Amino acid sequence: MRLAAKRWAVAIRPERGGRITSLRLDGEELLDQGIGVDQPTKGFVEGGAFGWDEMVPNVVATDTLPDHGEAWRLPWETVRPGVMRCRGRVVPWELERSIELDDAVQVDYAYRNVGAEPHLAYWCAHPLFQYETGMGGGVPDLGEGLSAKVFLPKGSADRFTLRWRSGIAIELRWDSELTPYVGIWACNGDLGGYRQVAIEPATGGNDRPDPAAPPPLLEPGAEYRWWLQIRAL
Image (cartoon, rainbow, N blue to C red; front, side):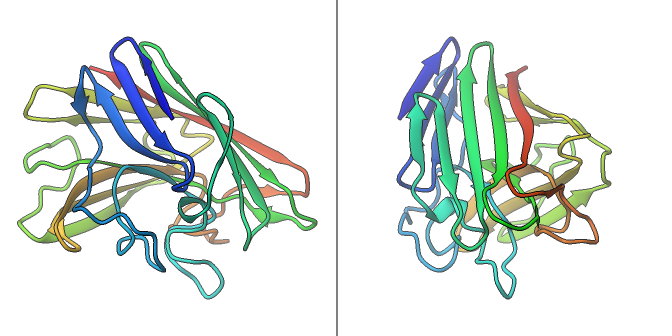
């Protein structure tokens, strides 16, 4: 699936976990294109960590939840151009994502509990942007072969700026009341050679549905909505 409007162009693979494989601004690719690995396996990195995925219902693996969740490894249904949905198998979640391009990239989400019991509605954005040293603005400046992840205080941020040496710059925005937890992941040649930075708003903390930093508890049939926006600077 391809979408384009004004300065933006997006490519999506519904069969590959709904992955956004390309996000271009004025023709320049913003997302990391990986290291030539694209074969989903038991682990997210081993299967090819590039582009933009949705982490549902977790990021870190637990005794019952797989590495980086289910959504990236399941086929997504295309509802109409720009609108896709997916259902979980381990946890009875349904996520619908709508992408609209105009002056900005507007991404709207709806999470539904399609099961018979209440559960914590965990989601985390996982857009892997291209990493450069010296990006500043809160991006960790890492030595060769290193990676790091930091978590911002709950509710402390509703936007983040990324700038590249090419002169391209973007601002990611979200509602800090709806998605109050934010992680920043950076990798400079670690994990086999990836160079990427991810800005990760989330509905819950600690990279999983953790009662200590809980996402919304949804009753059967209930729905939770939020959004993420990317603007050119």
